[in-house]
Length: 322
Image 1 (cartoon, helix red, strand yellow):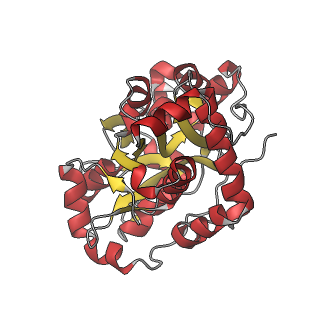
Image 2: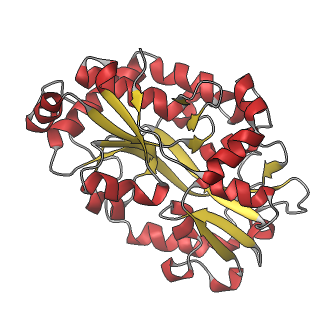
Image 3: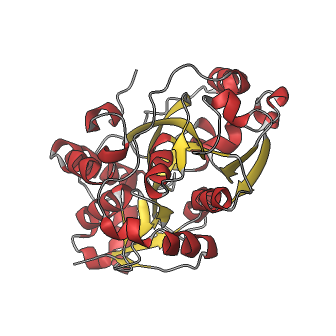
């Protein structure tokens, strides 16, 4: 049985999915894995250092796992549906398969596992597409119960929503057309038109108001979803895209005309987001995450969706506090 999905319209998503239907339909490996990361570029080192200095929280901190249903979980069960905010535009993470109409990917496997474990019935799990910039608001306004959508855990976001224990380690990478002469991040973004998703970590990394060096000369194009950046690159309207390495690898696999340049910045972790006032729900999610990893399902999902496009085996990306 499949979880229900609430559809939304995205002109950009439809344009790319139509163009890449053959790639998506095949489901097999395509594209090259990203080049090994080296030293952070000068253009964003200052932003990274300032964010490190300002971070006074523990991004690995969360409530202990529990299988007990508290008031928040009981209320969700009483209404007979758990609504999970997901992506529908990120290849291999959360994307709608044009052949089946179903959203599928690594995050979708996890969302369904969490939902089924909590509700006991996959038919009571609703997957609702949410834009990158709308993730925290969707939780705070009660439009979704959870966000499982490559959401980076940061001190700022921890003030807005509660997070589970991290479930994936990432860093920021840059995509360029294969025709670009750029060999590293400095060359890819210096004086170039760079696309980022609104509300993303990449937007913060490259925003001069948040610490990025102004002499980097990057001109930012801000869009609602990561896939919009790929569309703009296909149209020749941007020079580069900054996003996390998992999404970058997915885009490089989806479109054979783009590549990932050498170098990365801002090592991070991602987690499941939910209301701060629902610690029992956070505890239940943490228990599902622990079981999902220990039982091998997390690694199997990684091998299915991400391994052909990433540099390392699954355990390299499982977050370990340090």
